Amino acid sequence: MSANPAAPVPDSPLPVAVVTGGSSGIGAATARRLATAGFHVVLGARRTDRIEQLATHIGGSAYPLDVTDQGSVDAFCSAVPVAQVLVNNAGGAVGMDPVATADAGDWAGMYDVNVLGVLRMTQALLPALIASGRGDVVMVGSTAGLVNYEGGGGYTAAKHGTHALAETLRLELCGQPVRVMVVAPGMVRTEEFSLTRFGGDSDRADAVYAGVREPLVAEDIADCIGWMVTRPHHVNVDLLVVRPLAQAAQHKVHRDA
Image 1 (cartoon, rainbow, N blue to C red):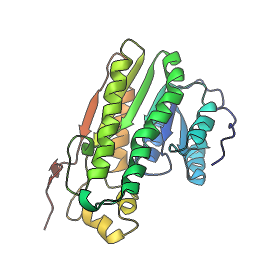
Image 2 (image 1 turned 180 degrees about the vertical axis):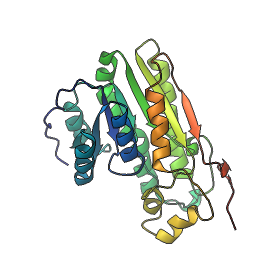
Image 3 (image 1 turned 120 degrees about the vertical axis):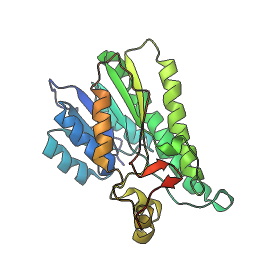
């Protein structure tokens, strides 16, 4: 991906919210939600055709972004000199292999996007967030960052890393005008998460949600993020855990016969 600087975000009287992984799922839904809340949304993702179309629809901006590539992050952030909100949404899971047979490359890839990608984006935009006087960093974590489960070692390790990064950053920014918040979704049915996890196997992806009457959808998490960033700025929502009613815990899900 090119590391050439992009044209800056157009001047806007609206506060600026950056959303990574904005081409689909929770990222795209969050962009729409923040636009309705009065933000100029700057979308970043690798699939530029999708984010450009969405940006046109919501009156935002879109730039190519691969959070696993420092050059791409630098180029993206050079176009965003002013920002009040960063939503670190880009992430994902690969595979369900047990620890004994897991692919170390899959684990490295999950760590790169879920932890190092968050680090790269946060480091790059933190000066602008501090300078705004009312900055927000929102991490899209997971209940997998709180509880482990069989077959999820690589993903749970990565999401535990996301949560640890957020908690550490909050400590280090104490006294600065920047909130650090984590939303930790449970079972969310989006068009791509499980399909990507299982390498495009739609049967395995669909089985994750089989019998679950109403799993969460992307808009549910976007609504949570919209609520978090619009609280009075002295209110820091450290961690918001949200699951569907059918999911009592990571390992306890009600499924209709």
